Structure formats: C-alpha cells, structure tokens
Image (cartoon, rainbow over all chains, first blue to last red; front, top):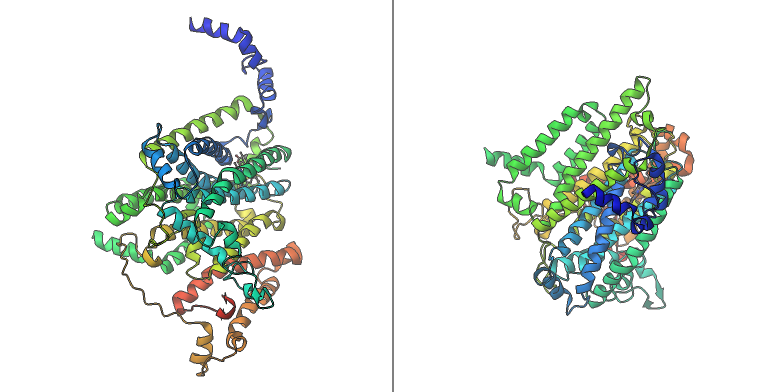
Length: 259
Length: 359
Ligand code: HEM
C-alpha cells in the first residue's frame, strides 16, 4: 500500500515539477540532484574522499553555518516581540519567557550564539592545523578572520539587548576599552594632542566610544544602535561574506588535501 | 583529605602558578609524542572526569560551573582539549608515516573522488539533526539568565565582559586599556590575517603534521590554548569581586583585600637604585623604561635575526621576518609583564600619566 502511494507520488506531475530527475540512487541522478538544486549546488558534484572525513574537517565550518541559520530563524522570531527601547526591552524579554508559546526561543538563540562562537574558533583551529590557509587559500583565510570578528561582534551586540544588569555592565566593561583608543578615545594616548587652539577635539562627547554608544553612557542610544547592528548590519555583512567564503572554497579546489 | 586536595588545587590555580604550569606543560606536550596517543587521550579524559567528579561536590565550584552562562565555557574547555588531542594525534601519526618513508594518511585518498550525494550530504544532514537535538535539550534544560533590570546606579561586583572577551579583561590586570583592549586585540587580528603571507613553508598544506611546521604550530597553539582559552577560564572561574583571585573551591568574598603595592620602574631606578628623588621632567623620569621598551621592540628582533632565528630570517627575508618577530615579541610581552608583576610587583615599565601613556 505504502509503496504504491509512494510510487504514485513520485510519478505525479507535482513531484516531477519539483524534482526533474529520479531518486539519487544511480550515478547519473546523483549528478543531477547536485546540479538542479540551488542549495545543494553550493557543493560540487564530487568531492575529495579525504576531505569528507569527519576527522579531517570536524564538520566545524558546516556546523558554524548551520548555527548561523538557527540564529537567523530564532532571531526573526524574537524580533516579532522585542522592542529596543529602555521602556520595553526588559519587559519584552520577560514576556518571551512567560507569555509566549514555545518559550524557549530565547534560550535557543542565546545558547546557539555561544555555541557558534566556539565552533567558529574550532573551525579556525582546524584550518590552521591542516595548513589549509596556505596557497591558494590565503584569501579565504582572511575572509574567515573577518567572519570570526563579525561573529564576536554579533554576539557582543546581542548581549546588550535583554537590558538587564548583566547586559548593561558587560557592555559597559567592553566599551570602556574604546575610551582608551590611541588618538580617538578621550583617555587614549595622543588624544590630548589633537587640539584646535585651546579646544580639544577628542573629549567624552566626541570620541570613538561616544560614536559607538550614541551617548556618554550605555543608554537608550546604545540600545538602539546595538539593536540595528545586531539585527541588520552585521547579519547582512556575514551573509555576504559567507557567500564569498563558500564560493572560494570551491574555486580554490574544494576542501584542501595533500598536493 | 578532601580539604588538603582542595587546598592544593586552590594553590595551583593562583595566576602565577596556573600560567607557569600551562606554559611549561603545553610546550612539553607539543614536543612529545607520548601525549598524543590513544592511551594518553583516554588518560586525559579520565583525569577530566575525576576532576569534575571531585570538584562538583564543592558548593562554590558547583555554583560557578553550573551558572547557565558559564556552561558553554566549561564545555569549551573539554572540547578544546579533545580537538587539540585529535589534531595532534593525527599530526604525529602522519609524521611517523612520513619519517618511515610513507605519506600522510590524507594523501592515500586525496585523489579519490566520491559523489557528494550521499557521501557528503548525508553526514551533513545527520550533523544538522544532532546539533538541533543538542541545542533543544540545552535550551529546555538551562533557562537563559536574566538579572534585575539595567540600572546605571548599581555596579555589580565583579563586572565582567561577555565570556569570550574575558581573556582580554584578564590582560587588563597587567596592561592598561589602550594596550589590552585596543592595541593587542588589533594585533591579534592583524597577526591572524598575516599568517598565510608570512608562513612560506610549502609543507603541511592540506594534512595534519607537527614535525614539518614546529614553529608555526607551537606558536599558534600557545596563543590559542594558553593565552586565549586558558585566560578565559581564569577570568571566568578564578576571578571574583574586585577582580581578585579566588581558588575554584574558595568562596567569593567581597571584602577580600589584596595588598597592592605595585611600583613603577622609574621608582626602582631613581629611588631604589640611585637613591635620588624622581626627576620632575617626565622624559628624564621615564628614560630607563623607554630605553628598555625601545630595545625590546627594535633591537631584540635584530638580535634574533642574527642568532637563534637566523635560518628563519634567511628563508623569509627582512620584511616578513620582522613582522613575525614583532608579533612574537608582542605575544611574549604578556607573560613577561605577568612575571614582572608577580616577581617584583612592577606596575608600569613606562608611566606617563600626563599623556595616558602607560606600558
Ligand atoms: C561564520 C563563520 C564561518 C563559517 C560559517 C565557515 C564555513 C566554512 C565551511 C562550511 C567550510 C568548508 C570546510 C569545513 O567545513 O571545514 C569552510 C572552509 C574554510 N574556512 Fe571557514 N567558515 C567560517 C569562518 C572561518 C574562519 C574564522 C576562518 C579562518 C580564520 C575560515 C577559513 C576557512 C578556510 C581557509 C577554508 C578552506 C579549508 C579547506 O579547504 O580545507 N573560516 N568554512
């Protein structure tokens, strides 16, 4: 019965409009499935046998990407409820736990973010240990370094959004560093040299930290800035760089192996 | 008995001992095959299990380790151990094969191609399901932390940065924010980006090996495991109120006082050695420190190029070599300043508060 239904299904016009080839059980169809599906088409049709070994890549790049997708989906869900203002932010987070069905979205998002930081580090670690940054993959390593920095920044900007003591003070500690940036932070070496006559150009109301926080303290301005960076700017850049990253993995000859 | 062991571990966890043990142990381990066998891996696993089984009985330890935001850090510790072992295990296995006249394991299969469907797509699918399962269990089991609403008038003690920056926050004990929070992180990023362009060694491309790239691998591992990961653990577990040190089994006491009598180099030089007052002119006052720093940054690389790193200098050429040497020197500057602090209570080598310029 079941197999008759299955056969009917895969012969139907609906099915055939989706998949223009038979089951990927013959070599021909295994090629076709990779060529005709836009997502699978990220991969080549055939790959190096040594490269698909779990002990070689640890699958860490793949898991990082998967976690990025998890963060995107759960993040959209959080955005339905969360308002980035001092008035509402904290209460919305409380509501997310107490009022909203599937109250674990925030947990998935937070733990997924922590996990992604770790998997990206491990991915870099693996790429280093297999020497996969060596020619011709120098450029892709550098795309990776920027992805690493962005992953940390994404995590850092997200840390502020619950607007509780933990969030506010962690971000205060983190952004206090910016005060000491040479020349552009008001407590940084050299800042005192930037003067027009008697008026110093770099002070607490004009330095790099002020630009970052949209104010002298972590307040409403910082919350909005971090929210926009976290939900729009950084994810877009990451998505763009990921496309470059994956494209280059293929263009550089697939997963590395001994020459 | 329990108390003696706890006291010993508390003592071993003191930053000076902790960093020393981590440094010495890691280099001994990198260069010795015995640590990277399957048996050594099992022994290591056993040690970790015994340590946690023992420690979790202690309330303070359990409190810190099971705090929801700290769970990923503790897992990171174990995961990083595991993957270090896995990569070095494969590296030493390949090295043995190469030494015996063979080729790395990866080379046996590098020219075999397999179909992406199913050989790659299936494992990816399984990995995605496993990750989802782990994440869901984790999310159901541990609620995300939420403290009191943000209040600019109440500063929590300790105030900690997010966990992945705690290594940098730990660095603040030894260096001022402009170095620990801005310049050194910048160098980490620049250093990472420079790696492919300064490592001209054609060997070890696409397979695990240690013997063929000893300098590169040990430099990277030391930076990643000791200076980055181990300092994060230190900052998370062993730093309490006022950023004071607390052993893993010690209670966080807000009133713990640590006598801080740190002294600047200028004082060592002018007051203690020469028996004079500090010169009023800052340039003169700080001259000894400035000379030291300049020598360290400019003359040391030159010396290295002519002595122990001569071979590397010839291989890399001046530009690449001096970049590597500079990054190496900056990396080592962290442990150096740590030891100066622990041994001599040295505060700043150069201290020009007039310009917010302290080293
Ligand atoms: C958001 C973060 C990142 C994602 C999602 C990602 C994803 C991936 C994936 C899926 C691969 C295929 C092989 C594998 O899974 O190991 C890959 C390869 C690679 N990645 Fe990443 N990556 C990220 C960050 C990085 C970082 C931080 C670096 C290095 C600093 C890096 C450098 C590379 C290089 C050089 C390759 C080619 C490796 C080879 O051919 O063996 N990536 N990346």
